[in-house]
Length: 255
Image (cartoon, rainbow, N blue to C red):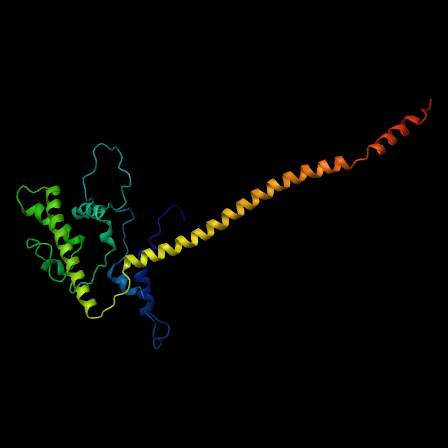
């Protein structure tokens, strides 16, 4: 194409608009493409050079040539490190069910983390610890990240223990009036694990028996070969051998 850049994709919207306005048959209704409104609101870029993405952090002055210059930078929030620390220390909190439904998208504005971990409409979870810790770091004088984490962690343990006590008492009260809850998640998991273990034991037993049978067969064939060779040696008649030797000696030699 002569080494020139093609700018035809930038004029797709204008071309389609012209074709739709100048129809061959005015009575025939032309169906509008699905992407027509999207391209109208978000037109393609007309700049032929690659745009420089916004920088979320200062470049490293030690590097002479920055790598991945035109790739978008990773957006990192301060809460990410706090979440990573909490869930690394409490991995089983990720197994608890979470409610991610929002009413109007402004639920976080109604939370007041100065009052504690319990917030209206939000169950106790790791995000409560992260937001409470972040509030203490910026609103309590002389508060460090480690100290705030220890304080909030103790509050979290106390509230979680209180929830477990309430659930256990409620379960005992319900069982007193005839309620049946079945097996817990831990009991179901242990049962499934025991079933898989029993299946593995049967498979391993069959494998061991097959290996032993193969070994016994190898030793048995080795002994049978020696016994057969000895039997063949014993079956040779010495009289026949002597007769063959004497007959060979009586044959005259031609000169």
